Image 1 (cartoon, rainbow, N blue to C red):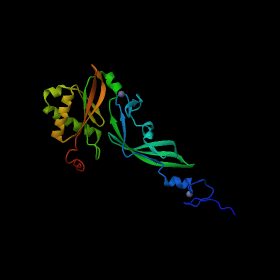
Image 2: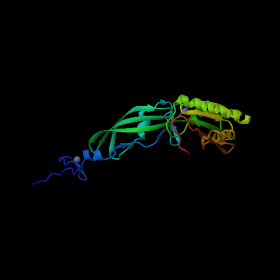
Image 3: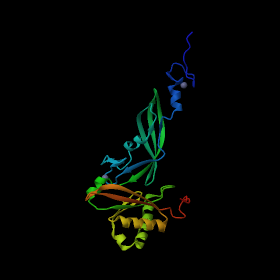
Image 4: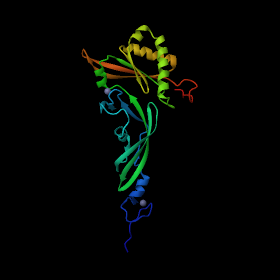
Length: 253
Ligand SMILES: [Zn+2]
Ligand SMILES: [Zn+2]
C-alpha cells in the first residue's frame, strides 16, 4: 500500500507540498504583499519630475499619483510574482492620499488577489532643472507648512492660515530681511518663500519659531561651485501648530 502525501494543514492530497504544506495553505499564512508605514513621493510642481533618492526622473510625468509611483512602494514576498496592481483612491487631502491597491499575485502556483492599503505623503519640491531654467536666483527657501501629525487641514484653509501668519511675520521682520524675499510660490501643502540671503531666511524662521511656536528644521543641499567654493542652498521648514480650538489638541513636543 502506497501512502499519499497530504498537506499537514488542510489534509489535501495531490498538491505539491513545501515542508508538508500545500501552496494554498502557505499562501494563506504568508504576507504576500504589504505596504510601508510611511510612503513619501516627492514631485516637482513645475515639470512633474519625481525625486528618487538623490536624483530626479520622469520629467513631464503627470502630477497625479499613478501606478508607476505606487506599485514600486509595495513590499513583495520574495516568492511572489506580482502580475498587476489596480489602485483606487479612497480619500485625499492636500498632502496625503489614502489608497487601496489590489495586487494580483502568484505564489507557488496559488493565485491570489491581495488588498493593500497604502498611505502616501505627497511633497512638492522644485527640481534642479526647473530652478535653473527659471533663472531666478535664491540661496534659501523658507517653507511654511501645517503640522506633520494629526488630522490634515483642507488645503485652501491651510494656505490662507499660513498666508496670514506670513503677513504677521513680515510686519515684525526687519526691512533688510523683507528685502531678501525674492518670490513666493503657492503649493497644495503651504507656501515656499525664496530668499536671496540665507541669514535673512534664518532670522525670519527663528522669529516664527519664537512668535508662533512653529517647529523648525534646517537642511542644506549642495547647489554648485562658485570661485572654487561649494555653494549650498538651505531649506528652512517651518511647521505651524494647529490654531487652538481647531480639532483635537496637538501633542506637546
Ligand atoms: Zn493545505
Ligand atoms: Zn521640474
